[in-house]
Image 1 (spheres, helix red, strand yellow):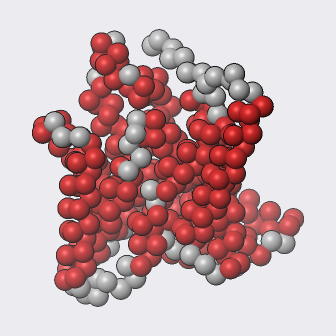
Image 2 (cartoon, rainbow, N blue to C red):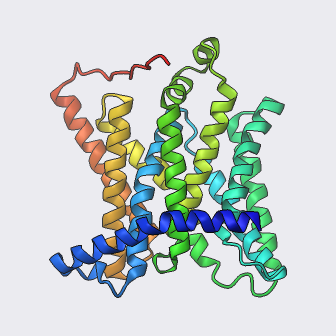
Length: 324
């Protein structure tokens, strides 16, 4: 009862934002007549909102991950988030609950993120080993639950594997707004510490920063990003938005902050173009978004080479970390 009450309170808190978003896009439709934002297709309003949120939070976290050489953690957590979806569907089918599979995916993905860190700490294994263990365990759990097919569990599972614009409900959009607030707020509050840990863990530890806890914060934030992006990207492609825009931004940026801002711009461009192309072409949104992002990455590499040719002595700058 307490969980349901809390969820209801969060929904009511973010619902006005969703209503304002509907009004803004309806107004934009009146001005442009663009069929993509026709008021009859409110599911597209929600899909665009979720996509724009993904375009911010994915590169926001992905920039830290890429610089820490943890690019593949998104893939590991995406597969465990899939297990979380299967758990939600299983509970709804067997216990006749009405829990959103995305909420159970959040819980399972966060637990998996912490397990990756705990396995690395307890066994001195490299991060890629712990990621491989958690990835295979999570996906195995998901496939087992689906294979049981309790109450038609396998029905509609493709939307979680590949994403689907038309299935973004008001509830899921509100969940994304909540995740967006938590992720952006946490990064804003801990930016200096995360940056310090990203570039020099040893120096950060000497400076008194609890490196272990900030590592855990980072993987938990990654789990939240993965679950949020899964709505339109799907499990299979969600990790791409953590990596590809960031990889493109690093080709043309001279500092961490510049790379962060550029990666968000590139991600938003990929999302908006991808959603538009997928809508008019009738293609899967997640796949189109990734292809557009890769295309932008190729252009970024070319732009970076041209820039280096024109200014061969240009050097990249490290961001300064202000003292608390």
